[in-house]
Length: 403
Ligand code: FEO
Image (cartoon, rainbow, N blue to C red; front, side, top):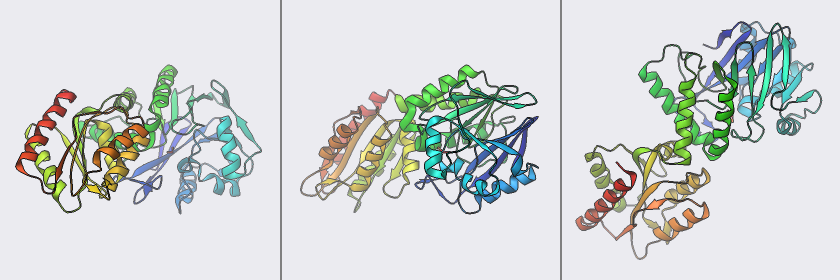
């Protein structure tokens, strides 16, 4: 639903987006929702908004109209997070209403200047500051920096114990329901999967800080989680909290007992070995995620690496170095700080192999503490004896994972 009552005086406005690359780079095969919230006391606040992509601010204005909220009645813009998927609409709003106050952290206030030339009527808040809207509605603010930008905060409505968490506890994926009231196992699997994809793309680099934010959130005693993306959790908010704790654990430690194969091949020599190894792992009833590069979007690749304790890198040598699409994917994994994995690399070469050197360079550059089984390289086509050796090394990898 695009306009949904959460509680007396609190309304959710929601739009779904698809057919875009989120943050300009992540595929979202199941779309993503943008949520904005209206809190009405004697005065009205809007908490977060929509992006400024074509037609989207107009959609928000349309929903405000449907929710019977007059733009001129909005007195406070509560900005939990300045990323333009939530703040982009402000430039359009400013053309229609000039009598409002922005409520945000100090770092967000600096961004309000640079993004929207907004220096006047900005109320900078810190943790535990409150804003009384009247009629019992009181907003309390809690800074949670680096979720995943430095200026982020949560807003807590005290009378209903609703936490507006913006990106925190967000998920990708569209649903035809607004709340967690009647989730089936299938719904939960879907939301967990979309949450994992979202977390790996957007949050993972900042897992230490996200962990602190989740800890802070749990001190609030919130009964309802109202995020900027995804559904509202009010029946059992602990479900999404636990999902996030799992994602954080995967990022800071190891993933589940499954294996991701990241591979590329120019003319099929490395591919032939990959296909044999994929069959071999499946034959052992181990879950395997397999992604050819560059064909697979990095968002999907990262989701799999986040959830997997074991990673197999299969790449030929190209111009004396690792096959570039695989090397670039590993660079991205390094930037996202997936620090610990059990791993194995193999691949073919023609006259000299560049696989190990570049692998070492990337691991050292990003200080990745991956625990590798010995790399295996083979010259030209893959032979039965090569496959036999690689299988033995896969067995060693599986031992390391503890499957
Ligand atoms: Fe949903 Fe960081 O923006």
